[in-house]
Image 1 (spheres, helix red, strand yellow):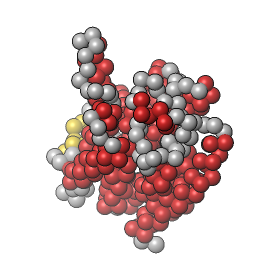
Image 2: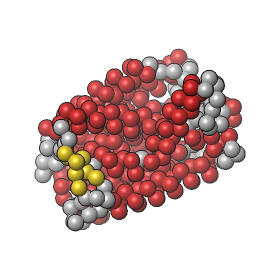
Image 3: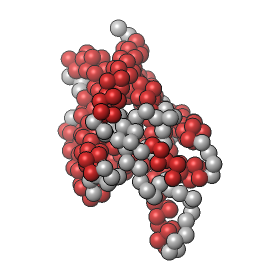
Image 4: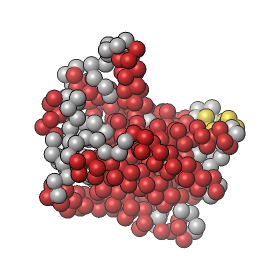
Length: 334
């Protein structure tokens, strides 16, 4: 089987398993009354989303897991477990999200784990992953600079501290982006394509990561069958923290974390809009930069439909992922 065919089949199986899981999972979530609680401070028109099942991220976690086990087998026999490390790391974040979702559903309000509890759990997971990557020789303190095809050599301690905070920041940025029907999943589709293409282009050593990325792409497309506007299910923190973990883990497994600035541009803008809004509000005692934060709500308040916001944000993600590809494609061929 050619490498390209394997990636296509990985995508197809992940899509099919995710779609099938959705058929079973959504009625089960409805029956269990696992409904989304909407923040009272959010847009008033979002109140009609109250009660739509959450924790739907479980379906693409299942799809991705099945696909990488089937099509990553050959690489595992050769001793390459990179895709499993990325999946297990993402899964740990998914479990943190699941605990958070469960707390929200149990208490029927939009508060789960405290911010400190989430941060400490995520930081512990990030440090454990980085130590594993270093032990496996997949990580170096040489910070790769896209476009310049060069490295900045950092002290290991400085690198590990910086890396841990980049991971936690990325995970929470993806979580913040998950605020409209299909937004987080759609924006992450080009990111999955980028990582799949890069792994395929760079060859054997990176093919397992490409398999994971193709599975993530298939899982997201399968999930979008149910998550596109008007959504029948939300991914919840279970899904968004898993996705954030996957994006961050892939960047570090490829040993090029700075590429997150490009492929994660939408996540970064969403997060910065939140930080700017809160900071400005406190400094000016009540004034706002945006009509509402994060940024997708600002555009809603400006009269944009959810579908338009998702389309525009996804297009921006696609453009910046294409730029990222141009920035790193010659890393091993320059």
